[in-house]
Amino acid sequence: MTTKPRIIISSDHADIALRQDIARHVAERGFTVEDIGPATTESTDYPKHGEAAARRIAAGEFDLGILICGTGQGIMMAANKVKGIRCGVCSDTFSAKMIRAHNDANMLSMGARVIGGGLALEIVDAFLDTEFEGGRHGRRVDMISAIED
Ligand code: RB5
View 1 (cartoon, rainbow, N blue to C red):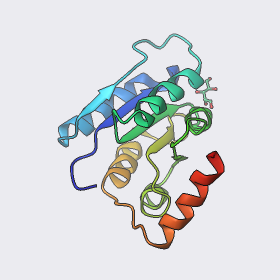
View 2 (view 1 turned 60 degrees about the vertical axis):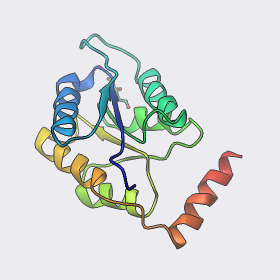
View 3 (view 1 turned 180 degrees about the horizontal axis):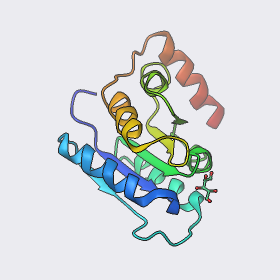
View 4 (view 1 turned 90 degrees about the vertical axis):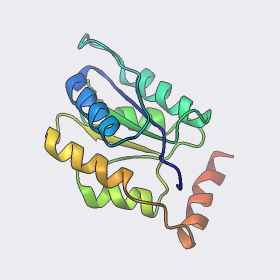
């Protein structure tokens, strides 16, 4: 990506403070970021938040997305149901780099009940600072897209 990617962030109720910390961190790094909530810690259903963010990436409004739920798993599964979305759950920086470099992931999901806030910010940085390598990986990503069709 030659221009700075536009970022959308969402979560369920599992940790809205972590989501807001990440949004602030990403904005401080100079990215355009939209945090689409939710605004309160009232219990809510992760599928609708994963889908909402994923649809706005699929529509071309944003380039990359960051999702948070308790484990990162449920919200990732919902996002991956939207055509064009490649979302991976990461609890380490190596995986966050590799889902960009090899899988051209356009969404990152993390589990607020799995990792701490400091590590979450490092994972976000690893995800945002890594470019897709293309080449043979492009052919494989195309194979993933073909499954959708
Ligand atoms: C909510 O309690 C929890 O199930 C959710 O945040 C997430 O972990 C689901 O995958």
